[in-house]
Length: 255
Image (cartoon, rainbow, N blue to C red; front, side, top):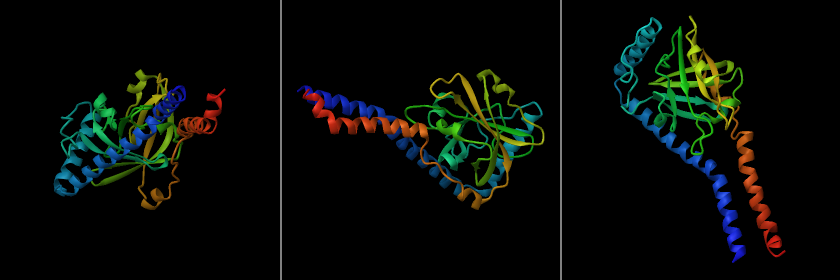
């Protein structure tokens, strides 16, 4: 009886340790479905209406730059579910829907657009701020953002447009310093923000990408990192412990 209890406890511990890994896979599948649905609906949109929405977003950015704001929620809301586009970071194999706002409902399923920043539609003198969670048990989201380095590329998809950004600088700031991420005149910037250090979350990691030319072949040639060192450790340790128990467990139970 005791040996069966030990086995159940060991197996339960293994499943518990592996939960974040399998949960993130499930979440990735859901995110892929949401993104796929978005682009299917975009295909059915009147091209003129898409162009109008992009123009409204740019007008919003211009009004924001000049100190006043237009209506926020209705802009780039192609599917009426709050999703305005997609962010893709090939190096860390990240693909997330971008939603209006940064409330908890949004940040638990994708990247949130900070309303007090420019819409991510490009243009000089703009700075879009996209935020995401790190370290959730149920999803990776921006957990691997700390693996990015200067020169890495990420991509923003809005409507039928693709915008490329190259990481130029990386900052670690206090949460209250987010207000200092201001528009830099003449530049097109997208800042990706998440909590840091991992598991402590006292500061904010800011990845600043500057607009660059989109080159499809360059994107296809980006070297992808399937799993992070941190994830490797989290997966290997419980797997090794389980194998150790399978191999030597009976011996120790009989002692």
